[in-house]
Length: 159
Image 1 (cartoon, rainbow, N blue to C red):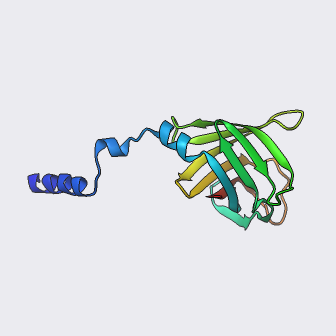
Image 2 (image 1 turned 30 degrees about the horizontal axis):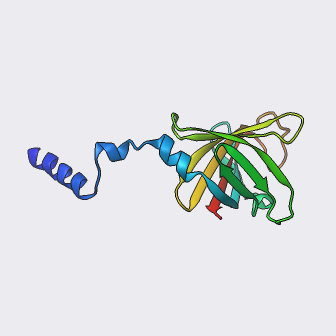
Image 3 (image 1 turned 90 degrees about the vertical axis):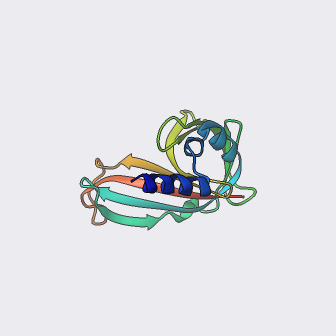
């Protein structure tokens, strides 16, 4: 048993694992990494029933190419076309939950539109966000028979 324990400690030292590595300053890392220009390169919607079984997964093509700029708590989005429609708002990171979240508030309309997204991946080149929505109140259709909730997954690449 002692040999196994020493072996695990040696492995952790060789791979650079330490207690400090496992608990990074997420506030600083996420706040720094999220800044900049991003482009939506993929989006899918997966519909589930009440037992969490997949009913259908489909790509959401109309979001591809939308550009996001995240800077100092402000967000600007623009259609893929440089002369496309532009929207602005604010964002707030919460790294005290698992997974961390970003709350985006778009304030272009009469009533602010707020969306809470889970950050499932964030690094220098990619960001993956997920949003779950209750759709149990929607009328049943052939494609959505028994639908309970949907998860939208948005993939962004640093622009």
